[in-house]
Amino acid sequence: MKEKKLKEKLVTLKRVCKVTKGRRYFSFTALVVKGDKNGIVGFGVGKAKEPQNAISKAGQKAEKRLVKIFLKGGTIPHEQKAKHCSTYIFLYPAPEGTGIIAGGVVRIVLELVGVKNILSKLNGSSNSNNCIRAVILALTKIRNAYTISKERGIPIYYDSE
Image 1 (cartoon, helix red, strand yellow):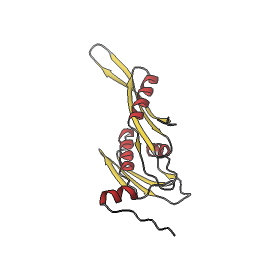
Image 2 (cartoon, one colour):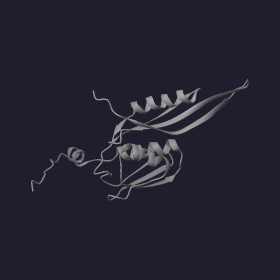
Image 3 (spheres, rainbow, N blue to C red):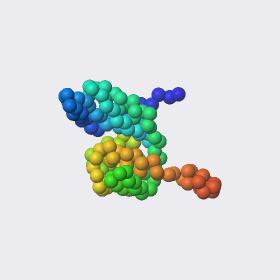
Image 4 (cartoon, helix red, strand yellow):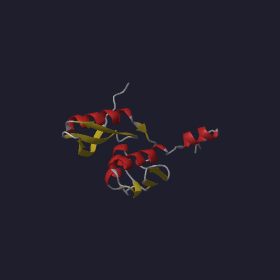
């Protein structure tokens, strides 16, 4: 099997605390996104006592959750929207030269997927975890001509001109 060249980006690293009767227990939570900039992306969340261990755990989970995204010439083939919890994401294809019009976490995910031109709008909650899940959900709902023809049972005819 081919080894994928995945790029990893740390989105958030937070120190969390569990308070008990006797003392406070500190640990770290990391949120990592991995992608090959060629249509494959995944994310993972890891918790550990040390920040480096949390990051590596999140990276391992991200590799297990990789999904394939259909791209068309550096953008998405059609408009797409998705919702996760109270986060709404709207993705629109854009012409060449537009760039990635997105902010924060959405931009990180779209860069690691390999999208060059896209417009996006994020409504509702801006929680990093929910944003990443909503963007990946929207991207996985994108269909290409082959999958649509397969669902409908119609063959694709190409013009030889």
